[in-house]
Image (cartoon, rainbow, N blue to C red; front, side, top):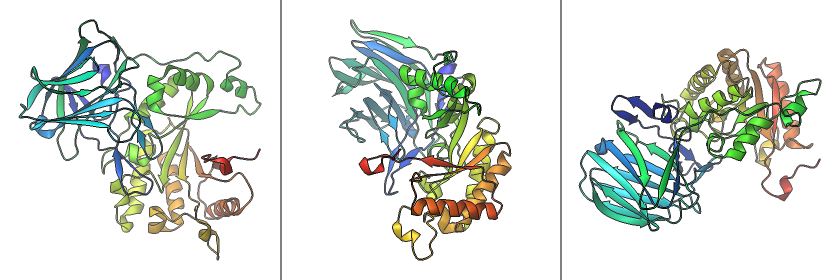
Length: 425
């Protein structure tokens, strides 16, 4: 069905099937030393409910570019700078063979791998057969081998992901089908319209609306559980009148390659929010972390223009749909030395290195130009008590206001990882 692929990043509908183009999304770890692949999952397409044994057949073309197909028993969990893979199998097929990797949810790396080296036609049929706790890999009817299933489909659900390698033109998924094997059964579950009722007087959004100030109340929301976890979705859409897009607007998600913007995950969140009369808060345009590698490697003299182009494109894309933005996220330093000897507590990071503190001015001015109606915020953590961070924040905002920077407010973010982080009421 066409709607199965309309919302998947990198997928282009054609007369011959779904063309899978490279997106190149990776998650850069906090120390920027390594990057973890972050391929898209088709959470807004059909998925499978399976019981017993089953098979999935993919007819593909373009194996000279490499084709990546992944079947998920559970979709991954995306955190700030890493991706927790849960049960899944990834097939990488080329004209020289197939590599099968299994994740079982215990590690970011695959816990089992099989490599089947054999010549494969550029146009071929790839079949995965789940049978007797094994997954058999077949190409054009020939069984290449098998890999233990490690119980990755124990929950009885299967979601599909596809990906293309960078520096290639991509590949064509001509068709994808599934059926039961033996006594096994497969049910194709089509995508559904996601609208929840909002008439319960005791939901948080309705209780908050009784306040004379008509307070919005919200939560960060992530695209994968919103479309795959019924309880998560019900809570998110029933209880809140505002959502913050948790990850899908961070630079390494939405702007993974130079000249390439990946909007579909964020578009899905904005669309569903609108259908449920929920406002959207954008997080985050400019930050020291969560930048794709190509931005990190940008020469300092080019960074101001890269920042302005990024803001203009992203904010312009969502103009009138995202009511407020964390324009600059976490500008304050975590190092005590940056609060001593006249230092003003500003975090030393790539934007600061290129422009000094005025990178903040540039970011806010560019955002206001891109959408004059949006509210613009500076966001940081550790602001809940008196001390050096609070004093540095107040002084920073005063300097920004004195310079005419169009800042509307400040966001208070809590990092609660262990006991000392707990906020004293």
